[in-house]
Length: 101
Image 1 (cartoon, rainbow, N blue to C red):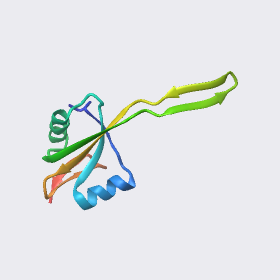
Image 2: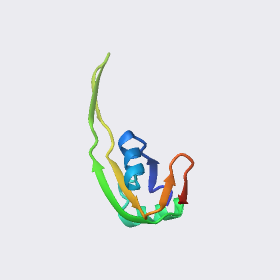
Image 3: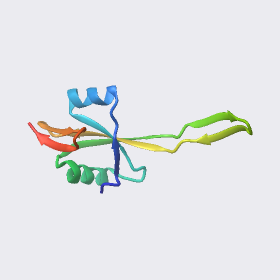
Image 4: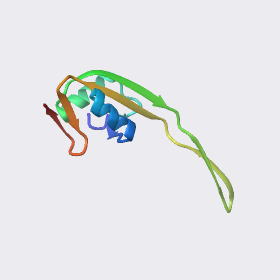
């Protein structure tokens, strides 16, 4: 279950969602489905998810010029999960523990 959730995404937009709408954003395994994500959130933070929305982002093409010529590569596909919690529940991203108000 822990391998389903890779890391929390802590950006200005994600923190605003957490404060206003009790939504949290996590990077998840690209092969994970919503049922697995819900179970991992329940096990790891002991909170109940009302809804889960997922977004898959394609990898970007990156290139750089070196002494041997142009090197072209691609970043990996990423998947994000937007998780909405029940009213009164929060996740403390910094310490990694769930809490109820």
